[in-house]
Every structure is written in C-alpha cells, then in structure tokens.
Image: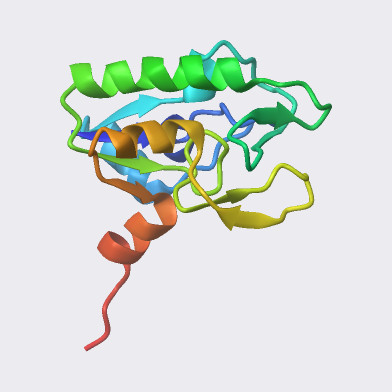
Length: 148
C-alpha cells in the first residue's frame, strides 16, 4: 500500500483550496492502492489557509508570521500513525511542501527560494525508514515513456 498526499489524488486540500491532481496517482487511489493523507488538515489547519514555509531552524511559519509548527507536527504524527496502521511500504508526497516536501523545500522567506531540506511529515516518514518519493520522482521513475 502506498501512502499518498491527498492533494495529488484530487482532494482540494492545498492552502488555496485547490488540488495538485496527478492523474496517475489519482488512478492509484481510485483502485484502492493508496492511502490518502493531508498532514496539514490532520493537524487542524483549515482549507483554505495562509501559505506556510519551513524555516532553516525547523519551525514552520505562515505568510503572516504566525508560528504554525505545532499544527504541522501534530498532523505529521497523525499521518504517520495512519501510515503504520495501514501498513504502507512507501510514500509519494507533494514536492516542496512544508509538510510533504522531500529534499527541496521553500526557505521561509516567501520568495519562492528553494533550499535543501524536508517538510515536517516527509522528515518523520524518512526517519521511520519508509521510502519517500515526490510526485515528480514517481512520474519520472514509473510513468515516463521510454524511447527505444
């Protein structure tokens, strides 16, 4: 079973109330091969919500300067519990998200500056030893047509 960022399957849970639908991933969910989570919603944040970014010190702040780290941590713990309970062997998470980003996230300046790092949930999942791919990595590895 794959753990999947809900927004990638078409759930309108992004900060702006939209989804980041990736049809190949939405199809996995429709076939019952993925467990959908949105750590930000699980942490009690509303949709829509003020956009947030992770600071270099690990805290998460929204664009109005409010520290929302605790909501992100709470949601990450709840999403990890779902992952464990459902026996998910890997995760496909939203690239650059302050929750789900893997390897590269926005720096907290709200200037679209990317820096090495993981979102709160992605870091927790990786610390558990569960393989994580972004949707971009998933598409590249499993969905690109290879020319012969």
